[in-house]
Structures are given as structure tokens and as C-alpha cells.
Length: 239
Figure 1: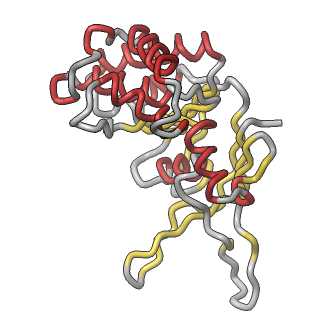
Figure 2: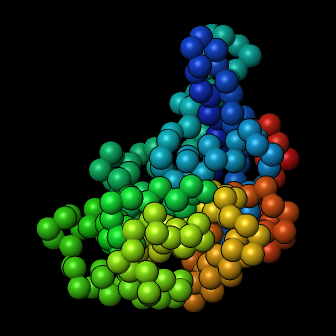
């Protein structure tokens, strides 16, 4: 059974009175421990697909049909065989907090918090602000930050970091809750090639050591070449 399985995904956004179709019937499986690269041009639907897989958004309820009088059920996303569509709001929050981690091109760090605080906040949210195991979480955060070369930056704030250091901090934050799947949307797109290569090397080592499943959106052919498998999106469809 695939760890993640998506079938017949459609996603349409409405801009005023205009409907803009982004995904047009996408089928995709992600196997346990796989590194899957999603390749495609800007506007092909890559980020939208990641948002759906991560439970940040929902696919359309109905697929388009040529017969105005009929409706066809929309697509489904299954995690370990269970449909995200059947999850309650609380269960979906747990899925987003614990089953998957997210890394984006722009780091989304909280500017008023230190590096250590930015990483531990995800665990605080998971366990509840006053109920989380502080010592255990801070030890795990420290271990992650040391592995990513940031042990000397724990008390620094994002404005004091380089772009590569900010992305490494975001990566540690995404992994603090020990997710089974990491969804990475152009994680090196805002970095120079050397810095991006360092990030990818660190991520590859972590993935090997922890049996992590990685789904990465990219437009970089070299990054895609290092993946176990590549899925290419063209105009909202798997090519």
C-alpha cells in the first residue's frame, strides 16, 4: 500500500466570476521511504498538489463533466489507506501536525523568536503550550540544529541569519515532530546553487538515517535527477 495515494484530483480556483482550473485529474502514489520529485513549469499545479497532499487545502468535490445534469465525485487522497476526506477537523489538524512536515521556498520563520524557539514552537503546538515535554523537545531541537550546522545560532533571530541558515532552521522545524513525510516546495529556489546543494546534502543524510519519505517540488533538472522517481506536471496533468 502506498504511503500517500491520490486519485482523480481536480482543483479549481475562482477569481471573481472566472474559474481557473489548476489540477485536471491527477493520479499519484508515494511509496514509503521514497524520494519523489515533482517537476513542472510555473503554473503547472505543483504547489497546489503539495497543498492537497499535506491537507492544507481540499480538492474539488466534483470532477468536471460534459453533461450539465450529472455530477461525478471528485478525487481522493489516502494516507496509509485512510482518506483525508473522511477526517474530522481535529483529525486533519493532527495529520498536518504529526504525519507530514512542510518546507517552503520562503522560510516563514517568526522574526521575534530565536532559532531554537522557531523550531520548538511546532512541538509546543502539537502537545499544547503548557503540556509539552520541554526538556525532551529542546534536546531534540538541539540535536536537529546541530546536525544542520546551527548549534552556534540557537539564540540568534532570523534577521541575523543567512538565507541558507534560515532554510536549515525551517527544515529543523518541519522535522521536530518526526513526521513520516516531508513535503518540500522549492526549498532551494531562493538560494544560490552552492548553498542549495548543502541543504540537499543535509536533507539526504537525514532521510537515509531516519527512513523519511520526501516529496519535493522543483523546476531544477539536477535535483530531479537525484530523486528515486520523477513525476512531471504539465497544465495540471501528469504528463
